[in-house]
Image (cartoon, rainbow, N blue to C red):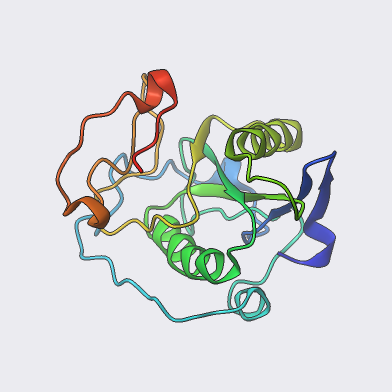
Length: 193
């Protein structure tokens, strides 16, 4: 999340990648376990209002803006794309929860925040496309997660990894009383309102 990590996204705004990288020859490490240890532990949610500057201090960036797990090599390279505009408080709270959540899952990840320029109606799809394009240009990711700025993972077994088919990671949310609401989100691009 350093100023060096800020990259231009043509027409739509700017892109920020925000993670940490550990300088180490990962090829020498053994593969992380299929299921990370302690994945079933309760997630400690933190709704503290935190600024992006405070996040930069808490999770300092390094060249490449990539986080790799300690002591093992993850089987997937994860790109998390967050379409965003004018919700700094939500973004701060999400990143303050998501970064430690993914670190606990021993994920090898980079977070891309695709920010739309001010004015006009928010175009979530365009921001997703811009973030995905930037992610795919920046590295060889094997897994892609599209993440809304106002959804925070609440259970540790919500495992952020790609499977053979696309999945929806937030099938039960507080807004709907944690009841599963069937939707065609992956086929019709509908979103629960």
